[in-house]
Length: 77
Image 1: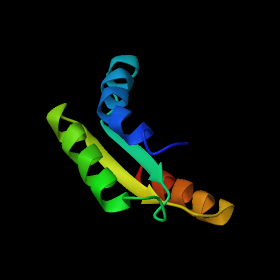
Image 2: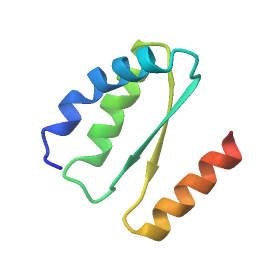
Image 3: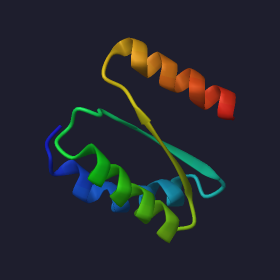
Image 4: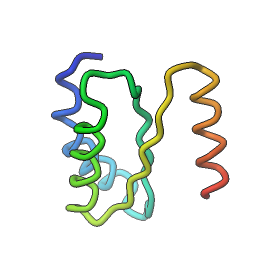
């Protein structure tokens, strides 16, 4: 990935909403060691709120972290 991908985040959320209009929650998996993780997460949270969606931001660096993130999502339904 490149640092340009987050600028497409709001558009991706809109497209996801069109694809899965009944989804009440959306999760975003991000690397906390990326260039601006806090700013990126904030931008995505704002974009989600703008389209009336709930966004769960999960962090992962390793495969183990990814597994934990998905288990956490399963528990949250």
